[in-house]
Length: 176
Image 1 (tube, rainbow, N blue to C red):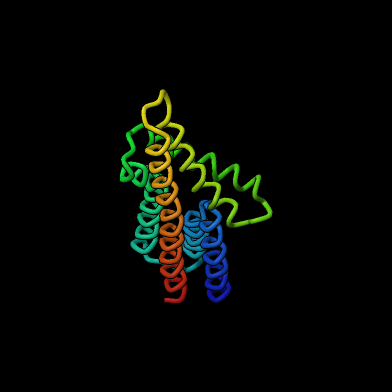
Image 2: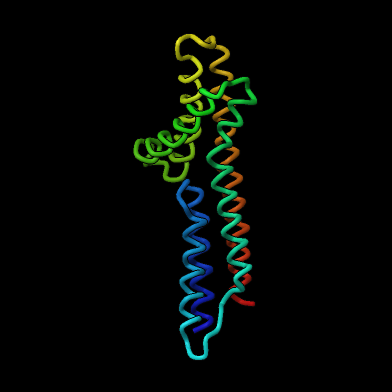
């Protein structure tokens, strides 16, 4: 049963990394798979553990860090491009809405539709927020929007990296 569980964790981790690329909660999916097998092995006679609790704790901390990076990277990009707090908030809201719309409207591009939608949404959200009431010129607002879009793209790449690290930890832990 241990081999079946370990192979199942590997499959779950591969699927989890793919989910993260789609801007879905793949890291949490991987952690839930690992915790599920942890619970199963803890109820067997004699009770054993598939993972050390520290291993699962590190994975949870990496997941929380990845979520924070994803949420705030577009805001950081907008701020670095000269945006205000309003532009940063607009980029976060735009990124979330853009990911949803990109998934639906660009369904013919399964992974790219979501990623592009999130980046474009972050850029448009920052642009609209900065342009509101003529606070910034179109050129300034466009620069801020571009910064937000680049920040969101960087966040997606970084989160896939976090997912790969969590997957590696859980896959190695399944066999150790």
